[in-house]
Length: 144
Image 1 (tube, rainbow, N blue to C red):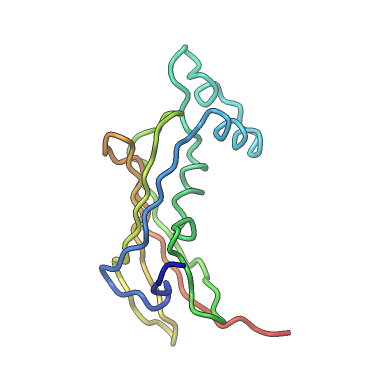
Image 2 (spheres, rainbow, N blue to C red):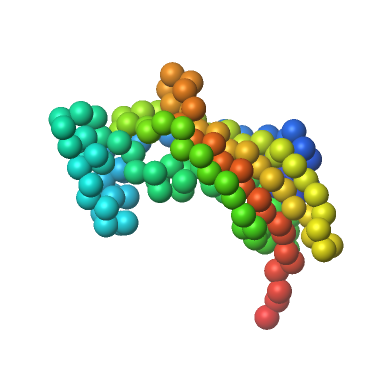
């Protein structure tokens, strides 16, 4: 098991382990059926071009919890407090994508610690596909 620093204890500049994944036609298609979006641009490009990856699939895979190193301290839960997302360019089915996450801000408000993490998705050529700023805080899990 990896020795991991819990997300709630990370400081500005700390990074999570990156995630690399390939968007296969089957994965994209399963996602399309799940969200009931059958637009031709996701199923063959519509004009015979390459199929685009559904944007919601990119959002799903860029959540910080997707990092192989993501853990929180025992007894804590994570609360999503906000985000800003910028789609830079489409990804195409068959692309191998890489997501990196870095803590860019840490502050306290009303007695809670907040983290702002930047998630960046790049394609196999290193071109940026998506940039997200995810804000979260932590809460003790309530028993019973």
